[in-house]
Structure formats: structure tokens, C-alpha cells
Length: 304
Image 1 (cartoon, rainbow, N blue to C red):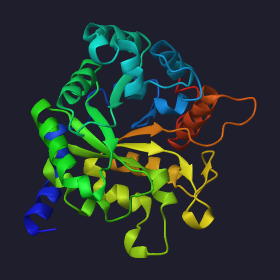
Image 2: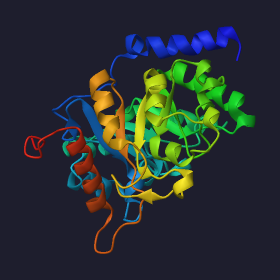
Image 3: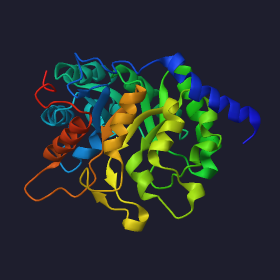
């Protein structure tokens, strides 16, 4: 990476707090029932995929899980307002009110194909996210061959509309992924860091892996949100396990964020096998309880 590109990325890392401050509604206790000593815990609604995911159900699931904020999957939005020619944008305020009335804010909408070249759909995705009160849209990290094209498209959209677009990782990520040009196209391009997938990508090649907490330290100014799951390392089978049973340092993540006062959303993503007799809502609530405990919040005090 050339010097000017590196300087631009470093400028974004250093200046993010000054440019944008904490994400809107971050830490607003009037809306955040899952605000724990400086940590805003929510979940991505993909966690409820084993259950009906119409909008009304998702609202109920969030409340029953004890959450006050969500990363909303785009399919929930499309299911409410329609798609294509059947889309009714007038329903967006109605959808937002459903969540507002339940005390649930929407900080991210995941429209995974944004920046893919469909300009009409991209304009809709951004309008929908903003109408719902979200300040960020997430999508997958582009393939290396598409990095420049999609990165520049996403940068243009984010800059034009004043919204963040954050890149989500699976196990294709390593310590060097964001040393490339991707974040340099705009300070409005952010990271949706899946810490569990990162741990599961661990290899013996130490040049391609650093401790996940060191990753957060390095990129904290460009991380909009973190997906929480507990996976084991590749050497241990890259398994998805219940919180606290894998190799992902979730219990150490929260004190780091609290100590540094970094405004990063933490979103549960339920991917381990749901135990017999339970369901996704109960398991997200269990994950939420784990987060609350490791944020050092008294269970009684958490219920305000």
C-alpha cells in the first residue's frame, strides 16, 4: 500500500471520533434496555432465523430477549414494505414506530448486496435504513477481485448520503485484510467485525493472525459494530459453541471496550446449535445474560 493511501487510512482511524462521535442513540438509556456500563448490546436478527421473522415477531423477540437495539436483516424490511414494483415506502415510518413503541432502536440494517451495481436498489436501501433510524448498512467484504470496484461504489454512496457502510467478515479475514486499500476509499467505510469468525480463521501462520483484542485495538476507530459468537480456533475444529465455552475472548472484550470508552455496538449472532427444549429467543436471552454479567452489571439494576 502506498504512503498516501496508508496515511488516509490512519487519518480515518485517528479522526473517526472527532468526525462522528458516538453513533446516534448510543448509550441513550431511554431506549437501551441492554445498555450495560457503556456497552450497547443487541443482536442481528439472523439469530432468530429458526422462527417466523415477520416484523411484528422480530419486535417481540427482541423484547423477550431483553434487548433494546438490533441489526435488522433487510429481508425483514422487504417483507414489510414489499419488493420491486410492490414496494410501499410509506410503510417505513409505520415499521419504525413498531420498533420505537417497543423501545427497540435499529442501529444497522443489513442489505448485503449494497454497492453491487444496482443503483435503484441501492438508493432504496439507503432511504430505508435512514427512515428506520439506522446510521449504518452492512455487507460482506468484497472478493479481492472486486475490492476496488465495490469499495469505490460503497464509498460514493456513503459519502453522498451521509451514512456508514460496514464490511462484515466470515473466515476469509486475517490480520492483514484491512491493511489493503478498502477502508481508504472513504472514512465512511467501516468494519462490522465478527470476532468469532476471526478466531475460527486462526492458522499457524502468525503473520496472518493477531489476537482478536489486538485487532480491535488496531481498528477501533473504524469498527462500527462487533458480532458476538464463541467459536474455537481452527486447531480446535472451528466450532460454534455456547458463550463462554469456546476460544473467543468475549469476557475480555467488554472490559476493553469499557476501559477505552469506545462507542462500538456489540451484537449477538446466535449460530451454535439450539439445545433441545429451547428456542432462539431463549438462547439469545442467555447470550444477553452472559454479556450483562461480563459487563459487571447487576441483573436487577439492568432492568430499568
